[in-house]
Length: 59
Picture 1: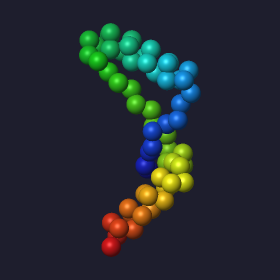
Picture 2: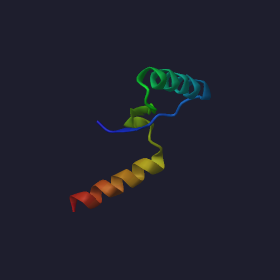
Picture 3: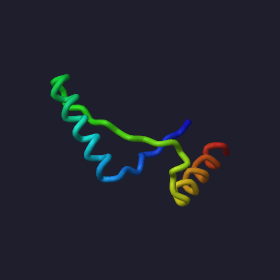
Picture 4: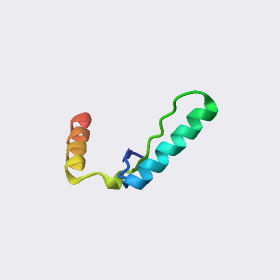
């Protein structure tokens, strides 16, 4: 299954940043959390480009 970066509200981004800070403090290493969602969230333009790339790969 393919994923795309998730579209998050500012509140959710802030929550992820807080979790990153807590996990970084516990592990002693800087961590970065990345949010993805399933492919249906891709824009129409992104889908068009993706389809064109897939066609090129099949040639």
